[in-house]
Length: 373
Ligand SMILES: [Zn+2]
Image (cartoon, rainbow, N blue to C red):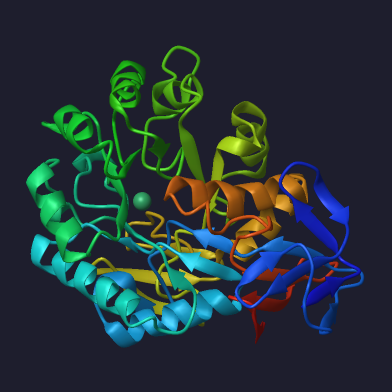
């Protein structure tokens, strides 16, 4: 297959006018068949990777429902998110074990839809003071043995784990696990020095920067300042137009550079569904327009999707090349799958999204097969 006439995302040069070929499942230099796809006037980008979303289409990863996970994977694929690493909420270990088992079975059965490339454990190792929409009753001190049990239940799928570094045992946890999983600083009251120590020990990411952490101020730069001072650390950003002001989105791209920003959707089950009453992590959530909130008004995830977040970032003034880097390249690096996906280089999976001139999804190729958007 040869995709012709489009502006193709290049890792080093941004968008270039050229053909893109693939054979079978892989991107190639040339094509052995005569099939072609006309992408004139379109953008050709790698399939996105969402490393932090909880649910969509009425289902939540934390339900541990195999059919729900299939619906989620198919919906994400239709939105051009070809790799998913869904996030669990703060739950009791029993439920998290079931979540991990369901994900492992889904992966082993090679179910249709976006490729399940990892599990993100957003809870339970978080701070009560910054729990946001996590259920406080089920928070737990960082626990290496619990994580090892969950990793075993997931058959190695746990790729990301969030933690509040000020909690008892957190630093020992980072030291013990930093080689096995990406550790992300999250839902935290940590000051600058505490966050610096977490990064020195091996934490490599920040979960939804600015949300559920102390603010960045001139005498107390907190987690944001510490992340900025550690070039190896990437930062997640919810770009739904609700969680973060457009000016701050622009500031983050300038401060951190596009190579260090990971766009995430942080969606809950109402994404892709009408307004109404839903739940998140066992708590009631009301959804109205772009807002999903608990009874007390706390934001409870988003109701968008990663492709829309990418488009929103562009509407805020981020270049399309930088937005694609943040939604496709960096998240793939964060969970260790960038050697196979996340860009359009030869030898990678033919997971390709065609965007029209308005940046709406026109078509999706997944493992070389055309999936209508
Ligand atoms: Zn969160």
